[in-house]
Length: 316
Image 1 (cartoon, rainbow, N blue to C red):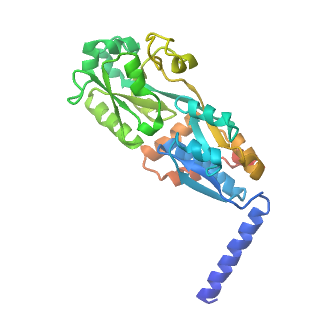
Image 2 (image 1 turned 180 degrees about the vertical axis):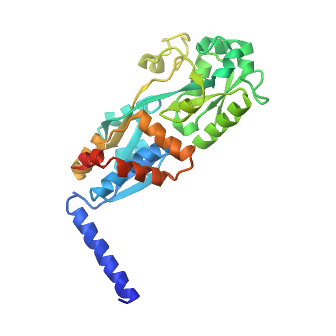
Image 3 (image 1 turned 120 degrees about the vertical axis):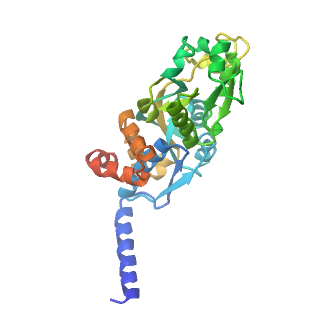
C-alpha cells in the first residue's frame, strides 16, 4: 500500500472508531475540563478526562484560574472543575451555585487541609506551638524571620490565585508576621525542601492530600476553629473589628460543573458524580510525579490501567 493509501486507511479507521465511540454519547462537542497549577488537581482532572474519553466523549483541557474559573462555569464557556477545596474555594462555589448556573456534583472522596505549617524542629525556638498565640510572641516571630522581614516572622503563602485569606488572617489576629506569596506550587515546596535540609526557619502553606506532610515532620498551626461567622461577621472572634480571625475550614474537595452539563452530556454528568479517589491514593500519585520524577501522564495511565473495574462503573 502506498503512503497515501496507508494514510487514508488510517484516517478511515480513526473516523470509524470515533464514530463507534460517539454513537453512545449525547454530543460530540468537547467537554472542557479546567486545569490549575498544582499537581494533584492535574492528576484528578486528567483521570476524569481520560475515563470520559474511553466512554467516547470529546475532551478538552483548558488552563484556568482557580477562583476566576467560576465566571466561565457560569456562562458555559467552561464545563467541569474537578477540585474545589472546602478550605479555599467554598465561598466562590456557593456564590456560583446560588446563581443556578453552576452545579455541585458532590465530593471527590478527598478531604482537604490547608493551613500554616512549620517543621517540628522549630518548636525548640517557639515552644508554645502549635497554639497560634505562640506566634504573637516577638521572640517566636523573630525565630521565623528572614533578613527581609526581621524582626517580623515570614509566612510563605501559596500563589495569590489560591485565595485563602492569609494576609487578612495575619492582620486580624495581629500576628507580627509578613505574608509573602510563592509564585508557584513548585516554588512553595522547593523553599520547604531547602529550609528543611538546612534546619532553617520556615512557616508556610502546606496542604493535604500532598506528599509534604508525609515526607517532612511538622505540624499545622492550631488557629481558632473556623466558623462561617468568622469569615462574615467582624464581631465574631478575638478581634471585634476584623473578619478572618480564625483558621481555614477543613472538609471535602468538591466537583462542580456548568449546570448545562446534565442536559447536554448526561452520561458524563453521571460519571463525574461517580468519580472518587481518597487522600492516600492521591498522595501516592503526587509523590510519583513531584518526588520520583514520573511523567504525570504516565501516572494517570498507570491508575487507569490498575483500576478498570472501578472506573468502568462510572461510565456504565
